[in-house]
Structure formats: structure tokens, C-alpha cells
Image (cartoon, rainbow, N blue to C red; front, side, top):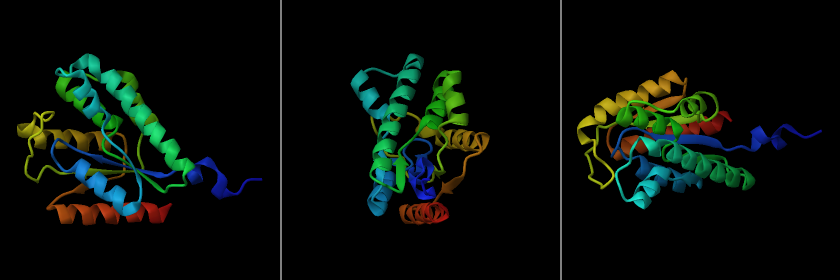
Length: 189
């Protein structure tokens, strides 16, 4: 009979998502935490997708973006589990895709919403608050809407019953709070 530690659930790494509106430090913090925890890190699929498309995104792009994000996450999760990693960090996830789809296009495909609710919820979400300076980037266009988007992300996390921590303050304070939350998560597993 296999021991509890050899079950797939025991070997699956904890999944932590960095989420929130544009230009709130998600990628920077994900990279920093990945280094500190020697964790696997999944970048935002949509960045490469948008760059490859070379044209503005539209509603028809939502499903390919969601499928690409899922495939990328699943590949890294499998690799992490096979390597015995304790932690996988996601620099966005399907919940973000749903929030942005509704924000930009007024709708989100039901299969994406269902997957967010039923299959793809992370162990912990680190919600990056928009209280840091905006940094321009060719793919960012909502400097004026960061507070509104933050509220939408928070509402989505509450809707799906996610465990989440709102990261506020300067970069040191955010990292300290993120590390405390990740440490608590890993300590409970």
C-alpha cells in the first residue's frame, strides 16, 4: 500500500498566483519569490500571445489566451511535481483572464468561468494593490482604471472562495507580506 507521501496530492506543489491590475508588481514579485523559494514560475501567456499577434487583442482572443495559459500552467505543474518541488508561482491565471475578458469585452466564455470556479483555483492568491507608481509598457493601457480593476479582482477571488492576501505598501512591505503568506501556506501542507 502506498504511503500518504507517495499519493499524487502529497507530491503536487502548492500553487500561488500573483494577481491584480496592471503595473502593480506581479511579475517582479513572482520572479523574486521564485528565486527565494527555488520555485517554478509560470509567466503570463497573454504577453507572448499579444506580442506574436502584433495587433490589438479582441474578444476572439480570449479563448486562445485561456487555453494557452492552461497548457503552460499544466506543463510547469507537471514538471514541478516530477522534480519534487514544493511551490509553483503563477504570474496570472485563468481568473485573471476572466476578469479582463469581462472588463474589456463585457463577457467571458462560460467554460472559462466554470474552470475558474471548479478546477483551477490556486492554494493562495497574492492580490497586488494598485498603490505603487504606474510604469508604462506597450501592453498596458488602463492606468486610470487600476482601482476599478483591483475591485474586480478582489470580487472574483471572493466569488470563487479563494484564499488571498492583499499586498499593499512599498516593495519591501509587499515582499514581506507575500513571504509570510507563502511560508504559512507551505507550513500548513
